[in-house]
Image (cartoon, rainbow, N blue to C red; front, side):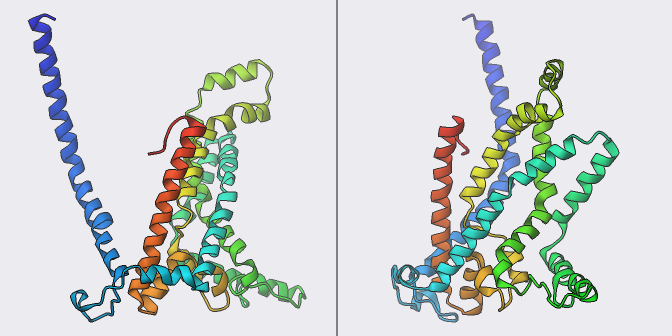
Length: 310
């Protein structure tokens, strides 16, 4: 290699090194925020190993080891019930997740650009409504004195439907609310994936005589499947996490047996009951299981897609 080529290579490496440090400098504030808000709170896990009582310094608190972990493994039917509720509602959300693909394909097939933008905007708006407002709307429509039951009463029906206080349909009702709130937002990802499909594939299919349904079945759906698979695997790894604010605002004694998820159980045991060590132990258990699920789906992704998620 000539001396000129070596000099050019050194200048290129030096320039690349400066650019890397510049990019690292831009990332530093975000790294600090992540350390402060995501890693520093992990220090609180130490309370799970002490018989901590509020007001007594931790240095004067007896060390109990794994007793708090043994407690929820040995008994606690409430914890098992919360675990079942969490898995059931997350499974239902997972079951209905293909609806976002169907909705995205329907929006994509709309010919009018103005109508397409209107549908996209209108369907995305519920994502920005807080769960408190969603509860207010649900109460106005579905409570015993709400709009639906008032109309039924005027039509002569003697029965009433109140999903806010009917434990038997709580899982289904909460899943429907989640679909209504997130369908348009989730569809954006699939609309972007559809936009990335090579338009020449559609042209070639039409030349071969394929109609609209054929192009959707043979081109659009295979085109969005990798995105769907990645999102599904990520959702599986997050099976023990729930939308706490959703179940918090809809919680009442009539549906408590079906709506109390793990996050709400940890909140109740830690904040309402005041058993901080036990609530912390449950939180640690949930985190450990989530990490195991994450690495499991990562291995599954390697086998199915030939590529890992992390």
